[in-house]
Length: 345
Image (cartoon, rainbow, N blue to C red; front, side, top):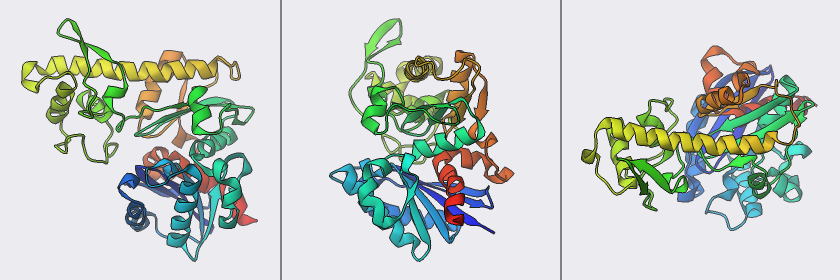
């Protein structure tokens, strides 16, 4: 039996997916706030290991090289790779470098830019193997990736985060961790346009919680004020964004405001998707393939675009108990499955 574990070392979460003979059997997402220090990766790894176990082969992708712990992306790639190699030893570990495929630890220096934040490429590449033409969209807790898949492969214009932001392939808005002050600057409230306070009072997790659209386990890190993860507490945090207290309006008013923020977020992603689609690379009949904890939002987006929707986990083989989490952790699942021929060689 061939056992491979795919790892996605992000700046806020560590994700892992175990593939046994090409079938995802276990997947997990663990909070890993690297801005608190790279020691968080050790802790998160052992928590993940308790769920997915060990395997002789490991495929690793990352986005955590962007965290404040590292001065440059190259330093971050080298640092995270060294930690993961140490934690996984003596098992074999290879790192995903986008179009260059998997590289060994001693090849990292020559592929650092390709390895940096390449997790989206793995998911899109696997999508292309299962759906020849599609618009792949992965909405995580922090960002949203929008990648056209044409002729069975990713048809991205950007390779780095900077280029992908320019081309609409990366939107820095996610289901849980995005600051509301980074969205619209004026919001409708009590018949007036209210300016926002430029403070970290609330996040997108709060608006989706208020609207009943936040999947269980999607919001894994501490709230902006350190208080409860309840609808009432989220309304209180939302009220702070416009300089108010929760008692100044009823629940319906806070729900209307949350809905406006959710709509603004959807429009931002919709605009980026429209930019990507304007290249004319994929037909109007091509589906949207949705992944990540925010795929419910992507499902709604597909309906607005008049396109069919396919969940990422419908494109892969996974046991029923692991399907949902395998979709949440799409890049980890993808590298585990893409690596199978590499390790068989």
